Amino acid sequence: MTRWLPALAATLFALMIWQVVVSLTDLPRFILPGPLLVAETWWQSRWLIAEHTAVTALEVLIGLACGAVLGVATALQLASSRIARVLVQPMLVFTQALPVFALAPILTLWLGYGLWSKVAMAVLIIYFPITAAFFDGLMRTPAGYLDLARTMQASPRAVLWHIRVPAALPQLASGLRLAAVYAPIGAVIGEWVGASKGLGYLMLLANGRAKTDLMFAAMLTLGVLSVLLHLAMRRATRQMAGER
Image (cartoon, rainbow, N blue to C red; front, side, top):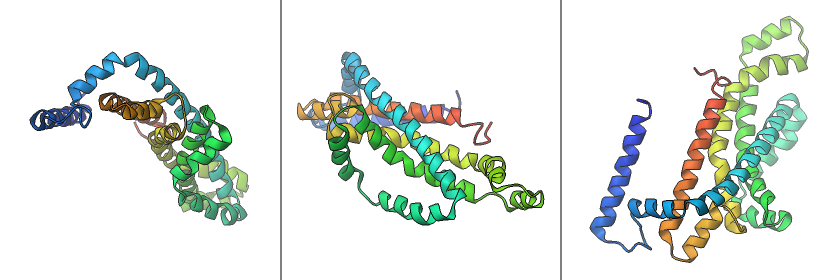
């Protein structure tokens, strides 16, 4: 409990400052609603927000699973093959230079307005961090381990699976933790481009109707969802990262 007290105190302080600013400036609610109004709106619309949160959470979880599998597979291939590093690695770097918002309409055109275009957006955002983190770990295996493997005449496959992969698990855990934070961003971007459900869709709907308090409630719900995903991933990968 003591570990969470500073974060809780900082959050409460920020909310208090937010409420004081709104009260002193007397801003219209459609410009900046106070946290009390946002909390009241969230409670009144809790079932609506829960329905859209479930859609976004499903998109994020599927995207996180697919991105993790693809990222791990790509990193293993890059670490195993010099040809793959020459051919694939520049393309991975190139894809990161493309703006995500430019790809979202194309994915929506190809995959439709349903679930899979949002999953694809989440995968695009988290694929590179997972691949890069795991690949970096695979290429930074301690030299002493590799020298011992050569002395024992271990095959390249045995070196990869029994030495390099276990040594790279902490880096993979870091990549997965980052992915848990970035995945909701990809899903929401996809919902902004074209969707009929989800927190991103709810934000656009609320903004178009000047319901800024509902937009803030959906946005804060997305933030809480991201924090919970990060904590769950951190707990799941604690042993992988060598933490206690």
